[in-house]
Length: 399
Image 1 (spheres, rainbow, N blue to C red):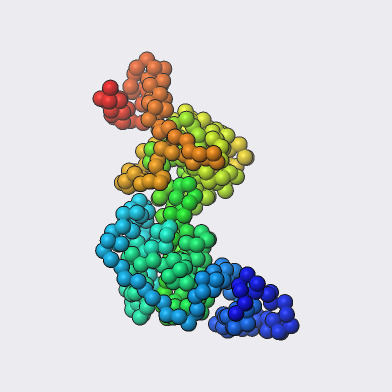
Image 2: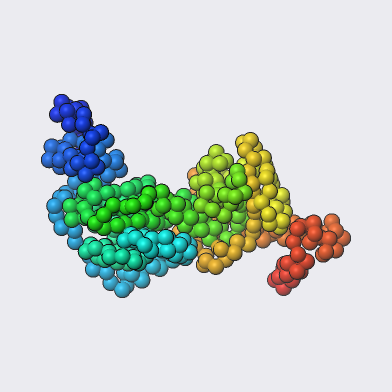
């Protein structure tokens, strides 16, 4: 077979003749034709299978792998399992709730949900209520490496390699021994936008009976948002969307603001709504994106409820702010290399000031304006007197 980088296009006469009837071919026939063109004739089967699958086939071929060779599933030791779970502790904690929900949704199907770390090592798999097939129990062992080098072309291996959502069906898998599987996977990114893990739905011996690609993207986004919240626990968390009904759903925008009023990072929805990057390359004041300075945002957090605000880009967004995120509070602080007090920039790393000083300054300024009257200050801040007394007691106790 020619080197994949030199594969010709499907512009030759034989290719044109065969592609003429593709609209009438079944998916299985199209994949069979694609494999014949790629593996037997050295032609690139563009349009017959997804481009991400073709690129994975090419990488496997360059690595001198053969489609007919058996897939050797390496043994998994207790030490390896413990190491994988420890490395991905924060991801597992952030994914716990949504994996339970996904498990309940899949309970009547033979599908399994798989969660891997950014290196492709499996760290959690949901049970199945129906028969798993012969291969599924072997490829869903915690600690097993599901990357492209070990498993060839699969949805989780492609996402691990490219960071893009992917579906791989049947014979689209590189190794013929894995062709009984169907899988759909989506990336999970951390607050910086780096790949933190991969969520996959897999089924053996039959096709999905629902839109697995849409479902896995939805749950991956939900897990990603919880991970974002956990990694922003020391910052001011903003939720925003064009409709208040979309807040606290996977469709909400999220932003984290530091103690100097700078936006540390946003999730993808938030970046799209504001027309900016997930992690601003330069220090960016929240006021430039939301039209609200740090003091206004802190005041909004004390009120608790979402408020409509017109942003500098013209969009009116419902914004909710909070400094004490209950979800994130139940999740331990993230391990290196993503400490909560660092902000990556184009030229290095900046320390991220937490909100303690800014929040304290707002409360003390309000108290001063109210001549020390705690009841009046609490009403102005939109909080209870009890909360204000607790905060004051914490600060005085820290002296």
